[in-house]
Amino acid sequence: MSFIEFKNVWRSYGDHVVLEGLNLKVEEGEFCTLVGASGCGKSTFLRMLLGQETPTKGEILLDGQKLRAEPDPSRGVVFQKYSVFPHLTVLENVVIGMEFLASPFWGRLWGAKKKEARLRATQILTRVGLDHHLHQYPSALSGGMQQRLAIAQALIAQPRILLLDEPFGALDPGIRKDMHALMLELCKETKLTVFMVTHDLSEGFHLGTRLMVFDKVRVDPHAPKAYGAHITYDIKLNQDRLQQQAQVATLPTHVLNQTN
Ligand SMILES: Nc1ncnc2c1ncn2[C@@H]1O[C@H](COP(=O)(O)OP(=O)(O)O)[C@@H](O)[C@H]1O
Ligand SMILES: [Mg+2]
Image 1 (cartoon, rainbow, N blue to C red):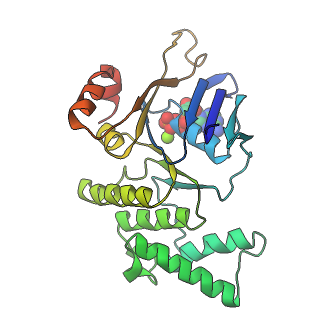
Image 2: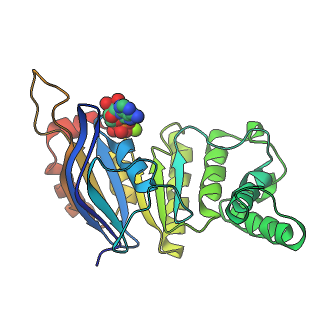
Image 3: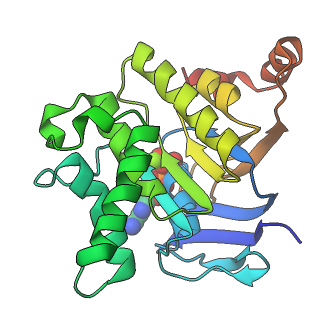
């Protein structure tokens, strides 16, 4: 049994078919990078994994069980746009994640539990390199630091699956490199299974253990919404540079051109 399995998954909005016939097995610990043209359904794919949306047809299994149609702590998410709370400090931004987990109604922890939450949050913030900024507000942080905070927020609930939607797309190349190093370290330390959408093919190859290309193969010019995208390439990546270049060479030019 695979950790995650997509069985003939379709997703439409009204008569607009966005994704069609997805069949996929992913094992725990894999780092899947997803590329494809804008609008082809990559974020929709992540939202289905998050449980924010359900397939129109087919099913998604997690540990052999149908995925629950609502977000839960086993899945964490980081978006490109900063998702942190501007009115809370760095530390509070992470603690609040634990508070909502422990007490969805009140969203508060008190006494020893609060102390423990602050300790855990501090440990995670130290891990992502924000230990000197615990009491600052997000507006005082750079873009890269805000994304580190968003990653800490996503990790505090100890998810088994991390969903990243172009998380580093807005960052400068140097900062992006630092974030790549952080992600690779975090993945080495845990059994985290990652799905990351990126526009940067080289980022996809660098971080992923597996690269998936989303593409629309069936096109009817008279009914552009009649067909959806599916995964046209699912490439197992390895660290050998020459082999990797050979793998890139197998991709069609329109896939190479739509990413940069
Ligand atoms: N809630 C929604 N209602 C209607 N259409 C949607 C909705 N969410 C996404 N879409 C459509 O689905 C398509 C895929 O969107 P998206 O998953 O965001 O693509 P990507 O992330 O690959 O750029 C787009 O055409 C978008 O307009
Ligand atoms: Mg998107």
